[in-house]
Image (cartoon, rainbow, N blue to C red):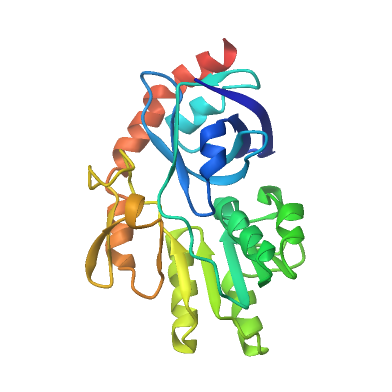
Length: 281
């Protein structure tokens, strides 16, 4: 059992939760993830480690309330317990040896991009952080991201924060203005990561994307998280989640990501009453 130490609503759709997990906290590295189950009836859900504190023995996760399990997770409060919290899983990000990096987060992807930027900043790498959201109401981790970057660019699709545009808008402008990036990290919706990869391709800038396809066991046994990278089959849970953005087959990835869309919608509708009951009780 894993105790919830802190719980904070970041916006109406996203929650930050600090969980007591000392063994994971001692070994966690940027880019790795955990798999949780709320109870014995729950599904296994992967979440990237947003932060960790080895001394306190805690792991921070940030999740978007989009499905039955994440909505059920959000019914837990400080002092409650999760049944399973397994990790760290996946290969750590390889961040050594870069001089200037652009770390890009889109929406919920900022929760994953933040620890990458923090690790690079702590290594002495010059970091430009670019974060994108649909509007100001959805912005998360603004203070945290600005603190681990030399230059911080916050974009909104509707311009409600005074900076209208996509993350690619800021990235392209920086590159054209002479930003000599030797690494770009893009984390967020697949179309966004694809757009960033296509933007950096003609400049020959190494671009890393973080994949979160359908995943079950997290050990490479089920094959559910497979994707094609450089013409070869890879498994996000053990070969990733980081991959070369210029080699990912995005068409295949996007088709596989919507395979169970109708099933997921049915599950949400069937279980919404259960969630409401759990919140009341």
